[in-house]
Image 1 (spheres, one colour):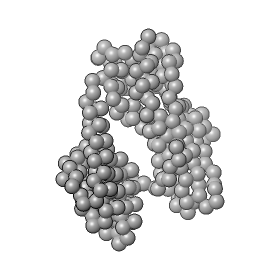
Image 2 (image 1 turned 135 degrees about the vertical axis):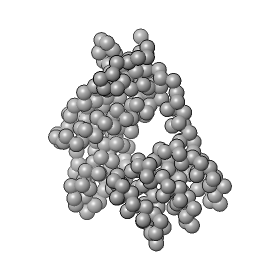
Image 3 (image 1 turned 90 degrees about the horizontal axis):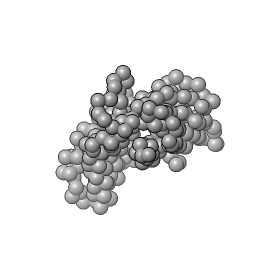
Image 4 (image 1 turned 45 degrees about the vertical axis):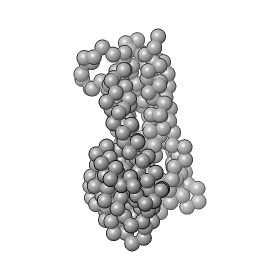
Length: 256
């Protein structure tokens, strides 16, 4: 999985900065990039700006706005997308349809009846990099992603399950986190692994892994904050990669 990642922002102040570029960037390519970065923030504050960009005079910007709304994952964007389904550009119409379908599928998955109760266990670091912030991100994002999977009910910390569902325990591991330079670019690789255990016996029933590699110009990583954002994006991509195989592995672990 090779990604070309830009440095997406997450703070509200950065949302405002990207929104300014999206609305007022003189070059359409600046507006396209701003739209894509807004989508990757996963911040719902970006949605109104992206919805407004569906009326941009450039088709590439409109298509990027639709794609960004899909990545943003806020189903409240569906009405605005529907209003633009008859865009004069075929590429934009296709991007809008893809976004609507993806957001509807996500809504359906969240409504699906739980089939397995998942407890999140310990997250360990098997990489050569020691970082509390990275491990905190791994733990919090893993919980968020597992909770969003179709058919999964996540057991909350300190609460016992009230539903009679088959239960599995998932422990996690940061297997790889490394970076190196290739010319003027920095290349980062992250691999994560999740071990699925049956409950209450805790016997291992499967492993889920995901990885991501990304590169960015070295001059974009001059600050610690920029490097942290880049590392976060690659980590999120690796976790997303693992999640593609997670539902099947979780359900398989509940079968005798």
